[in-house]
Image (cartoon, rainbow, N blue to C red):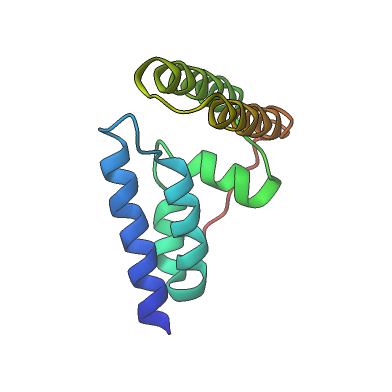
Amino acid sequence: MRYLWLGLGWSCVGLAMVGTTMPVLPTVPFLLVAVWAFSKGSPEAREWLFRHPKYGPMLQGWCEQGAVPRTAKIASAVAMAVSFVIIVLVTNFPVWVLVLKGMLFVAIAVFVATRPEPIPQPRTID
């Protein structure tokens, strides 16, 4: 089982790396799944993600406090708004599909916006 968790974790890290260069592929959700998988298969890999200079604090904030930084809240709302405009302009979806997509994006944006902001906590590594 450990190897399945490791495989899932590293696959998600790989997808997250691709997502750093492709705007249509998210990064942080894949890293959250990787943290979850690594917590079952490799605590060392989980700590490695927590120590990452860019994503580590965000992952720790979510895992330990359910918190999302303000910059991430703004970035996600802007990304969803831009995505929705592109979907409307480029696709030929029926109106009901666009309404459902819009409602989904709004629900996600409200969820993210209502998460608390992280409280910095010193982290000790044994």
